[in-house]
Image (cartoon, rainbow, N blue to C red; front, side, top):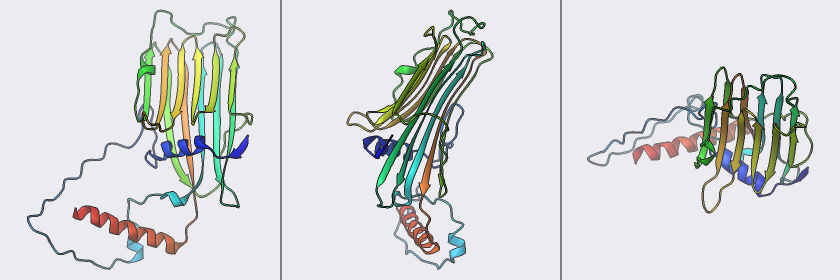
Length: 277
């Protein structure tokens, strides 16, 4: 489904771009907390002195960032998958790709897929434990990013992961799927369900099995709360293999050496002003 980008694309970009430029986590996201800068309190104003710096020195400076004008598009990939010990598998995935066309306008393409294989009760133990419970994660509300893993059982593998990167080349899309904003699937017994839906400015991914559930949610900014990205795993059983994966690839425009130098000098001046405060 290809159309001009609406509130959905802008909300996802605004929410996801608020994260660090590079983040990966198994049960948490983001780099280690940055130590607070200790301000230096001067007893009297000091004269600011400037020194010329060569371009090769500026090129090695850290702290560079991708300004809004450098982002020409993005690809958001979401994938949730659950494998039970009896061989049953549930998968829900989706892709939102936003690109700039020749008229310098943004267009969006959405692709989704949901699949459930096996698990009708005749192919062995599902590993679910009716005496175990994992709950409460759905009630957690945060602004920003949350990753929650609740496990009650043995020999389980559960991973929440989120990754953000920048590239000026072609961006990868998840294979398969249909050009629709939503997809749903279930087994014949209705005990295993998989679904994904883009809509209302956000995304919802959900897997439901006899041994628990896995969800991913992206909610846009609103008057009540800031945007949020949430990944949740609840496993009540044994020998379960579950994963939530989110990948955001930001497409950056190619910049000439002169533009890079200008951006580097400007940032150096801004950093100098912050330090002086």
